[in-house]
Length: 95
Length: 485
Image 1 (cartoon, rainbow over the protein chains, first blue to last red):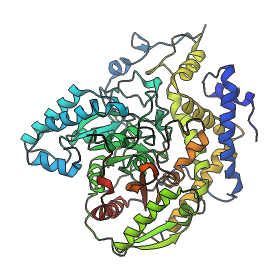
Image 2: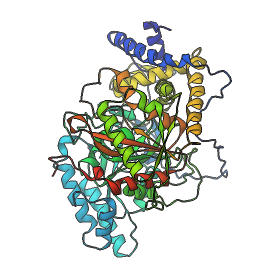
Image 3: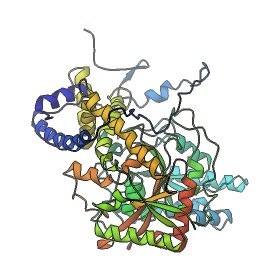
Image 4: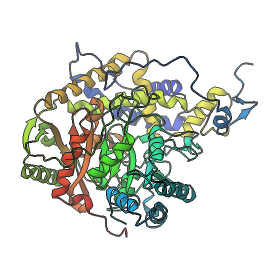
């Protein structure tokens, strides 16, 4: 598998990270090197092996359907970049 | 006070020969003085620390002190501590004052410990040298030209330079054990699920685990007695009976079966590291341990597997940093999408962006099976290797890192070379096993060598016992770097 500059642009778009035109080449080089390492995985046959997503087989716990959190919006919004009338401000989404 | 262990310092405090305020002032003076050049701390707040020290002294006066009461503890800047700047060594969180405490921080506070400051680290714990920090690299106290290891490099360097008696860190692929080895201190990564991840800024959630740094195995045990415990706010926290991690320290290790994986000793290990590791194993034989050969045939795949799984989880975890609710927002943008892209492009460093991009790719349509699922299948094979190995032995030993500390800048331009410095530690995270590193001598250029001890699930007390018995018969762990006094 060979990554291309178009792949880098597509992934950057998916990841919502701006990659400038003059950076894209270097990003591609580095990622290509890392994928060369990753490709070593393909050498081992894993047919019939169950994927392992966690170290311990734990069941998700259920809790009582009661309010456990107190209202801390003022504290949490005190560290936000832009707030108005208890709302987080972002650029206009709908014209 | 310089080289006292946590145990000894606690005894001094208990006997009221010294107060927590005096101890805290002593170490703050070191952090702000001789420690400054190491760049081991991101945040220090003398007033806040001394307030906690006064509270600890009051607690003691009321007869309510425990073993950690009044002890200054440095915390990796990945743990949210209410009112403290908590940056994860990233520009994107450079203005983030945590509005709540991590579970581990809560437990230390409850024990009456004093937060001595927040330590430097690789940005979002992504790195093995502490060079990816937005706040600049940390220097190795044994040699200022060398890296301290990473990602918990600041915590390791702070304990090595005796700026604090103990510290905390986190380990996703070796980030406690590798810096412990390179900086000549002890570090323990517990079994996955033993320490709550609540309030610990997430990197790769299925691998992340917090643990302690200290000078001795006994001190690690005392730290574990505080840090470990169930927490309902972490869905992977394990409900287990409370353990006293010091309970087995004094046991004899006669008859202990030590597994030596052929893959650890086959190739890749630098000769100076191999020599010290061999001598440490020989010391265990003298203590009456048996050694048996074991095999971890899939271990060689742990680095590629890790560099699929960890970035995949990171790309998801780090999507929360969008410049809306907290953290850095780009000063100029055209619309919402542009605000996200610019805030993230400017807020994250190169290595973090690289890993997010890799993670995004391996999870994207058409590649999920070939990479992510493949890596998860191999993860099971790697974990099963350990299950087989532990049928033949009680603990596994080997090097923590393939070389001693490398120079600052030496591997910074080559991510793959950097990744390979975690070749001996990553498999342990993939399996979710406990692992630790203890000082075992010095290699070329007098840089420290670490011995890695890997235990079976929940076998921390035995590993601490094994390390403690070695430390009764050797003094590598009490050696100090020159020029730090």
